[in-house]
Length: 165
Length: 165
DNA sequence: CGTCACCTTGACACGGTTCAAGACACGTGG
DNA sequence: CCACGTGTCTTGAACCGTGTCAAGGTGACG
Image (tube, rainbow over all chains, first blue to last red; front, side, top):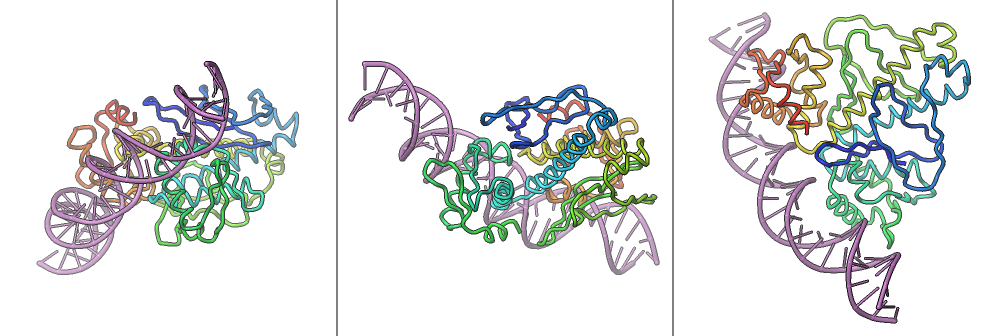
């Protein structure tokens, strides 16, 4: 799933990507802050909003999970703020790839399931810049972009970590 | 208080500013993720980390407050991500000023308590750019920067909202 | 009056956006 | 099987905004 927000001028900001088992969309206000779209097949379990006490009295384990999910969302948001805060594109891309590899890895394959447009809208860049950066990294042998642009293989993680500074 | 992080190359990213009554610094990992510094006088109450259940069994009200703080931090982080995500500086500055005015306002005075350097490190800009943007906004009559650079008066909030897009 | 920290302003270079064109894979219909 | 259209990605050229570097201004404080 991706959670996102459309701005008045048509731009789209992708807040986060969510995977199997993730809790997302906990909110407090009267209006929803984000929209959500599925990127693949799956089942969504919706929960009615209630106070933490009520939730805990009914199912302590689940209450703990929800709070843990909030905490994880906060940590991811903090990390992503650092990414967006950076000035140079290669730093952003490198950080992004490394974060992906932590979450999605089977071996060194980052299996990037999102399109260039999604990536760009998530990182605050244009698709052209994303494309250029990836080809540049590929030329340097740091990553490998298979034919159909499905997935990215990280060949040199330490190089990426160096780019992060 | 400001919470921040020093990068290996010496740059400093200010994650957030905290005020009287705010809970901050809730973390889960083994290592602390941020440093904290006081910007003025105050009293800090430190709490030993414990599980949510333990906390709730001791003081349900406080447990609720802590979770509410986490939620507020998450919302602020999401808003700040949008700011950092934006491409144009004036959008960032406008958003920043409006957020400040919500939190700190007495009337229309934004009472910006932080230095240009703090602002820049928070928004991911250089102090020169921040300075230039503020003078530009002042020339347009949107804001007013009093003599000693203490505080900023928002003269035209709707203009700022228009800049946000 | 001098020093220091902070802020402002200017000139210039560079990186990323923008605009435009082309490549490539894929599906569809003939 | 090919012709065609579509969506996605790549590549190129030019422009522009922001970073960088450097100088100067201003107020606080001894």
